[in-house]
Picture 1 (cartoon, rainbow, N blue to C red):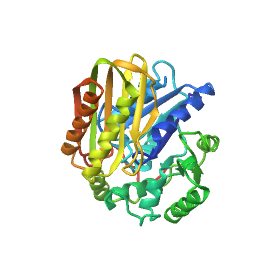
Picture 2 (cartoon, rainbow, N blue to C red; picture 1 turned 30 degrees about the horizontal axis):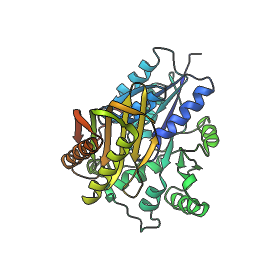
Picture 3 (cartoon, one colour; picture 1 turned 135 degrees about the vertical axis):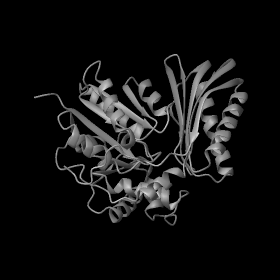
Picture 4 (spheres, rainbow, N blue to C red; picture 1 turned 120 degrees about the horizontal axis):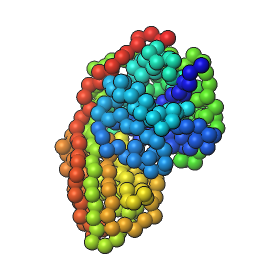
Length: 370
């Protein structure tokens, strides 16, 4: 019997914790002796997630320029390229955080067109607690900083999940977790809930056990309005920027990363622009650091410190914010420039892509499960 690759896709809205979760799962499977490949996905190139996972020693392919559903053939080709050095036992896939309808456009096409090559794991969707509370009607009145059309995407992500992974449970009281789970059950009754912390690893034994199951998974085909879906995605300004930073003398890389995010957070607050996710990574001679912000009401986190003093680095900034892309680009340039000047550095912007995502046009869409 030919070798089939176990395909594990973890979805969730922007800032939910997908990259951290995939990194922890990749380490688990690698420690178990399995050959693991990771596929990241974005509407543009220069993705912080790709650099972060590669920096942790994993083999990573990137599908850029469109979501998995709209770039399905490249997804399959990228998996194939990861197998050139040794066929993977497991592929971990991270779709774009503003994407939904993935069961009909990714899971089912893999099942029905590539069944001999792929063994599909249950589809888990990560839920960030404050997204759940806001969008599903929790403590602050059921509305967050995103429009109803953007919130529609998150709701649909939950509806197609085989299990919903309630993340950041280490930051919540038990009563808060139970309140959130009650909201989720009201919206998607009957869908299993798993409590996890991507940061600490809490609940990951249960997650691994869930993902190992075989059965009638990937069956939740959505009834979805593509006009609302497209309009919700288009309300987000999208920016990926790569910058070379050079100092007059050595500077603290981690301090620079945090300062960039902090300045961006303040300037976006002045614009009353809701942040879905800000990420920045600094890369230098095999070392790297990552800072991020996962919402306007969150604190900046140095998620992966480098502990390095450097004279130069490559800086990548990713921003997903509910504002005009041209405004977002100006704010990012101003923040990076100001942070570099404060650290005694100069910033050379090498490439910047800022835009609103276009209408999703899936390569395949199967209206009925196999």
